[in-house]
Length: 152
Image (cartoon, rainbow, N blue to C red; front, side, top):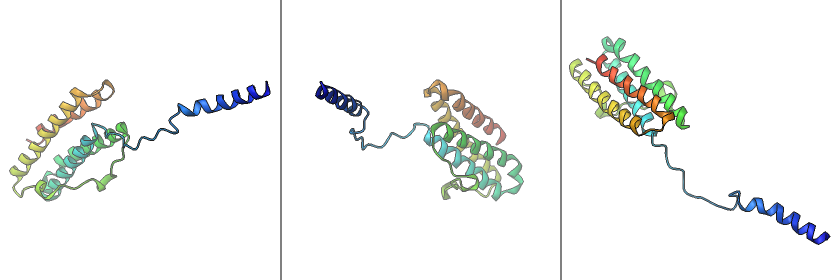
C-alpha cells in the first residue's frame, strides 16, 4: 500500500509536467504583428513632415501638428501590438529619396502623395482588422484623409 501511494504521488506530480510545454521546444520566432508596418509608416510620414517643416519654416505651422498626429498614432499602435517605438525625435528620418523638394508646391505634392498612400494602407488594414483594432485603424485612416486636405 505504501508503494502504491508513492507511485501515485510520483505519477501525479509528473503528469502535469508533461502537458505544460516544459519539454516542448518551439524554436520558431513568433510571427510579427500584421499592423507593425503601420507603426513604421506613421513614423516615416512624421519624419517627412518634420523635414519639410525644417526646410520651409513658413510651413511649420501646418506640418508640425500633422507630424505630431502621426507620432501619436505610432505610439498608440505600438502600445496595442506590444512593441516599442523610438522616443520623440529618435523617430526614423526621411530617406534621401523622401527629402522634401526645394519648391513649396512640389513639397506639398510629395507630402500629399505620401499621405494618400498612408491613408490607403490604413484603410486596407482597418477593413481586415479585428473588431478590437478596427476603431483605432479607422481613426488613423480618417486622420490621414484630413491631412490630405490640410496639405492643399
